[in-house]
Image (tube, helix red, strand yellow):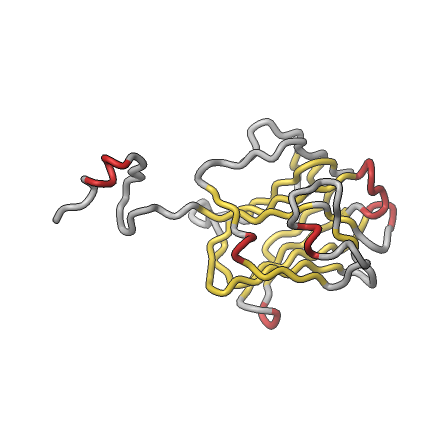
Length: 192
């Protein structure tokens, strides 16, 4: 995940953020394989603003809390990390202060897997989806929902500037315990 992060995580609270997006090479961005939707938005600040890689743009909700971002996949995927970009200095009362991440097969059976309190976040915020058990390194799901439960300074609507969703990079050779990367190794990795 983040190697040089300014984040401090203690008892479900995250303070600060990281100005640069740093992700391990063994993770890949899964968001482009999903259908994205939001519970509400102001005109011109819709779901496309979450995915355009422009930190100046943002999704702005329009309505009652909780504000929801729904990420749906056609097939079950393994997800390991959610990364959000927020800027308290620019957005003030629009900045989320409490976020819930839920996973499931669809809207009917979402289960909360993580709740996080954010203290004046500015930058990239890394939220690991792994559980308390060391064997639970990812979530296997059809749908991920990010719910903004409350904002700083009791704000009503919210701003989120970017969301990235990462899963483990698959081994290029199925049922192969080693990670062969060069062309020569891959050529001789199986017996005919």
